[in-house]
Amino acid sequence: MNYLRNLLLFVLIPISTDVFCERIYVVVNENNVQEIDAEVVKQIYSDKVSFWKNGEGILVFELPVKSNAREKFAQNILNKSAISTQRDWSNRFVNNTIKNEVKMKPQRLVAKFVSLKESAIGYVSESEINNLNGLKIVMIID
Amino acid sequence: MRVRICLFLIMSIYANNVSASTVEQLEKRVKELEILVQQLLQQRKVEPEVTESNSPSENESTYSTDPLSTQVQNLSLQVEEQQYLIDETSQVLDSSMKLAGYADVEYKGSSEDGVNEEFRMHHLSLFFTRQFDNDLKFFSEIEYEDGPKFSGVNDGSGDMDESSGTIFVEAMNFDWNYNQYINLRVGRFFTPAGIWSEDHYPPFVATQERPMHIRKIFPQLVDGVSGFGSTYLSNDISFDYNMFLGNGESSVSGKNDLNSNKATGFRGNFYFPVLDDLTTGFTIYNDNEDTANGNADKTAIGFHIKARYENVTGQIEYAKADLEFADSASDYEREGFYGQILYDLDQWALGYRYDVYDQTSLDLDKIKRHSLFINYHVNESITLKGEYHINQYDDPLIDDFGFYIFSISTYLGR
Image (spheres, rainbow over the protein chains, first blue to last red):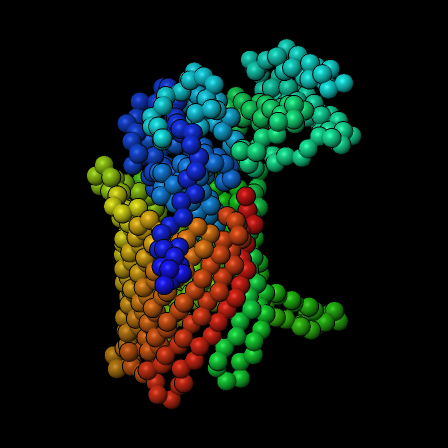
């Protein structure tokens, strides 16, 4: 009986891969004056939105699929795994419905690049932000 | 030796700082850094005590503690950073042609009499794309289906000695992306209808076998033009639209329109901020002289909905076509529906689909299909699938049967 119960629990309860303890900072350029909340971040990273409300195209930075920070971001913002989100980007590319081709960079470069480009958005873990020059934190994922 | 190299590197990096003001200087700096990386990598090869580690761009959580490896990683990042600065400074977009693709191999069998178990080299598809600038893009897909082979007799006659399989230009189009509201696509593209018509690629769908009505009510492709875009209906609700016009469905639609009428269509998609994802929409299509269906005046409508809540994704599509002929006694309807549910569990996915298709309302040719399937995502690119389908026929003269497919499919892009 216990075996059956455990089997049912295994099937019905999603396995959480969110074991990354560091905070994640969602960052934009310091000159970006858009109102950005979790829903906006979700729409940008699910490719539903590709322009800021002032009409400028959004430059989206993603982290490598195996990055723990990406797994945590994907689970918290998109409620799916990093692998699933990467499959979504690839799928949109091959079926030619992609609105915004994401740039995948190591997180040590993301903060630097976002600080250089006013239309950019990215996310990095706490330990990778050495300074906040040129950046504005719009969301913190604990 | 290591200390000397590290000192040299650090001095080199900071002596020529990032503040180089011209593209030429930056490019020179990148070359210097690339040479340094190569030197370090070679140095690493001759020092066997240095442990291997994953590239930082592959796995950031596994940085090596070895100082030399760390230095190499840092330098690689510096190279990438400098390259980005060049792009930004010169305002030049990477406009080189990009290559991607996918492939899938199947093993299939059936309980139907006379059908053998077999391997199928189903698809090898190559995508060639090029982003000319921020507004203009080219996209193409060339599909090799069933391991095609075409071989001539070589006697000057032009006769074929052997021919099998299919080579098919599935997509070839130019996009002009003006802004979020106004975009134009011209060329060959998958019909913007419902969900599966576009969203059908084997590495990213749950089954190799598509729902039965797909491509039979709305055509597979449009050779023509489409205008598309998206707008906000409120702060959180957005609406995507796509209107298209083309030659209509025929085997020569890439070259000719076999009549003076153009096929037209429209798809609307609403995105709602409920559950984790909720998309619903409709498609309408008309071809006054549908060559693929006996020159019928064909009007089709469809509805679709896709919703995800946590690990469960549901997807429904319904479509119906009215085909009217000069002799109204020949008029008939074609109708199809499927509902699919998928449960994701880490790298696994389990699902069920109920599928109905009625080719013509005149005959007893309605088919019902129950499909059970399981997927295992080895990684973000490779998927293993197992699926079992049972076909049930309204026609008592046709026996029901089941068939299965095991497959491996992979996405070949980055």
